[in-house]
Length: 165
Ligand SMILES: [Zn+2]
Figure 1 (spheres, helix red, strand yellow):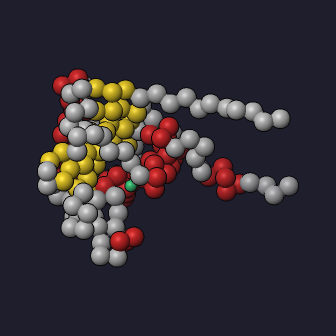
Figure 2: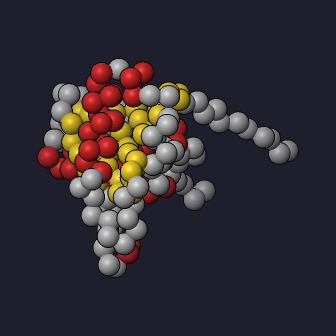
């Protein structure tokens, strides 16, 4: 018998940063600001990520491209790796992501890629704490309360424990 299942997904959408709470607004502006420091000579697509740790500290990351394209890395994973390496006891609780080109901030929000979604989900699993994702667009902002919700039926450590029988 074939069953059709449904995984609900909800997120919030805001028109302006003024509608964010002060902490999230600071995080959003940090992501926008650090995007200017991205190394993106090939795509011209500059991304900034700002991770809020439970202590309140903000850890930043940008995308860093490479002439050998697959060697480049995204802003989100750079920021999370930096947080994990330098503040292993301080859990990430939120992350803002902003993208821009020479023409300015992206009009629409830019979502984490599949690789980054996988890493966000692992961080949540590892820390037992949700990471609120705040996506910056010039004309709208989206909030996803749990980053792992961006990756339904995600691969996780339970998949490594499968029994063949
Ligand atoms: Zn990514």
